[in-house]
Image (tube, rainbow, N blue to C red; front, side, top):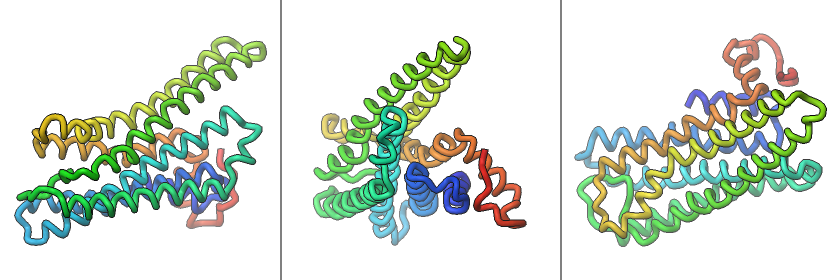
Length: 278
């Protein structure tokens, strides 16, 4: 919550950070913040009070918000990869392709599609799901494939080729500078690009793949996975919302400068909205 609040405050306060790309980062931070504010408290209460009278209501509320916010976070990550593709691979067309209008559409899709999926899956799962004694982290329903496809497999299919292409183009650009810079500098740039992209994709998969793959395999193993395993996998997926501010905020020098100004309290001493961030 603290990391996402820093990202949100930085983009809203500093004009230098108010760019199309950072509006997507802002949307991502809002979704991740709400995961911590809304979903995790519901889940904690349900785990601590499995026999509570209001468990059924909280379970349905948690399920709806969980699907909406988790899927919104993943779709925002997906659109950020599209934005980075045009910025790195087609820089001359970037300003004409990625406009404020396009970013607005991306953000709307990142929230409306999860909202529709969350409501549909929750209502449909409640209608045709099996009776359960306690609130599980999944509902046995034929509608689960909607969330799996829209919330994981489609983003993965989009993100992997895009980041692979970005990596290849970045390496090519680094090598093209070899006549102007030393080989060590080029090698350093290649390693940094490789490391950054590996972290972006690796953290996303590390957090969400266990839960999503388990959900996919459930019908084929007759739903024999224990609730405790699903709980562990689901909390692991939610941890992606904690790590995203570090990946998309702390890795960039202008965000780090903004964080230092906010945490030092200098924004309360004078107007720094137009300050140049290094």
